[in-house]
Image 1 (cartoon, rainbow, N blue to C red):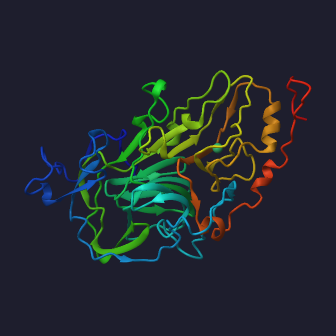
Image 2 (tube, rainbow, N blue to C red; image 1 turned 45 degrees about the vertical axis):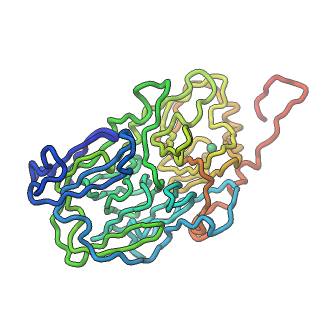
Image 3 (tube, protein in one colour; image 1 turned 90 degrees about the horizontal axis):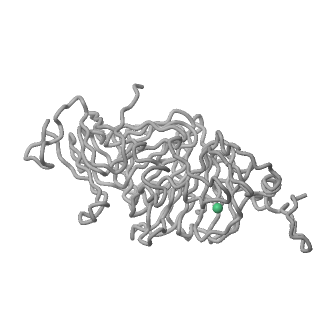
Length: 445
Ligand SMILES: [Fe+2]
């Protein structure tokens, strides 16, 4: 496959024409009486028309047929997509999942949409406030099927297998250690090439933004230039009555048929697009004297709530870096957090838990639920000689952190069969080292 081209930048006003049709973007206006190449003009709005300019999102698509050319939508099987947060009772325990099992292609063909499994979430789709965490487990490409989400944005984190994603805006190629965001309403189709697994953070009613940098300054963390937007690409492909458009609407799946590929956008312009980002490009900020900065320094993208500084969800990574802090217990500290923390592992070994937390698995530490390094990690790090050391080489762990209190689905607690019932045992060997008659610290025995 020829290497795909992208436009660089985050949230900018962009314009793209398929090179097969030069001049396909109308000049100086959005709605000429007749568009170049006799295309149809269609606006895709990602924000209310009257949103302030800095949050106003929309794109204009110039396409062979408008999206409305389809048969009526009808309800289809939900599979394991869910937004019923009362399906099972709440569970405040530390939860950890072994790697989620991918179905074997020789047993059953499963594509990206059929392979969506909702693990946890909170909030309300109808009032556009909340989030869901999904796991995708698939082995086959979407054939003459596309998907769009009326409920929110998908931040897709592939963990195993590459994805070729067709969108109305063009094609994106994604491999583990890269992420992409496909925003509300955008139609896309996913090709996979093997048994494939990954994580999805869905946010309702808000879009992902780069976090403010405050005293860090103009550069650092995820830099805008490293985000990549596809370039216009179209196919004029007839599929008489045979292309299925699947829509997630109010948490339920619907399907409609149409006669043509929906990837028939010849040109587009606007600031509402899908995009991808390579996590290797994250410029890590860290403590260089003593103690820890809070993990907010690792935020790649944030979906803000209306309360300043409080996110519906942050996407946070723990990339390879140097650990240099003097006189410091370097692994993550023990903590209880008012936020909910879902963690996943793309590759390698997470520093605070060497075993049990594996690539393709996950953990959930709910609001105010205590957690931190396991006993082995505590003992080792308390005795370690504090030289500069590489942390997390070959590893990429991430966190979806939310101000909402997350409910786990029945699939997550039971059906998936991956919940690690013994997780709590990793903290059981922790010993008290208290020496009431001596203030002098001694190493743990
Ligand atoms: Fe935590």
